[in-house]
Length: 182
Image (cartoon, rainbow, N blue to C red; front, side, top):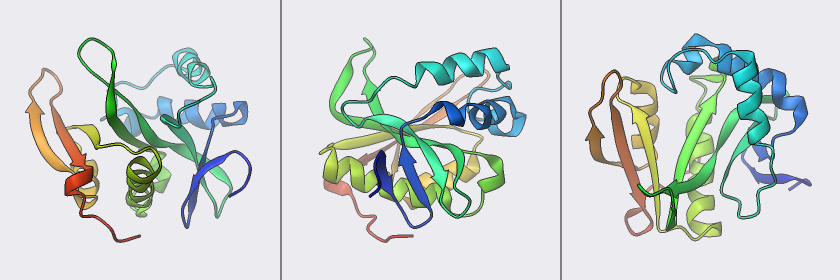
């Protein structure tokens, strides 16, 4: 792999965010379709910039949301990764990580979320030595539910909320059965 690339798939590579990613990141955060299931309202530029800048600190344990680059275009298209899973007291849970995939809507329905998910599940279990990977999905987001279930995650519980409800999914190392590559 090239310098700075944490992980690579057939069509994607993942690296630390850099300032050159800022405009594409902010454009995604301002898009109502993108934000619909990941927080609701579009995020104003100043808030998106602040969120982006907070994510620029160096990562030492490989648990992070990584810049996602679409190789055929050498273009930033979002962020994906496994990041720390925290308990109710805000402490990281040993042996667990949370999976997330956020892609620009121009790249939806191309199998890229499944491709990224497959790579990060392998990375989480094989490289990070995690025992469990979890994720939470807005209950209205049928496309993400489909991807997560295709990756082998199992529904653990439903969190009813107002205005949003969430499905909480788990994939345990011992029950891992997704081995095919996209």
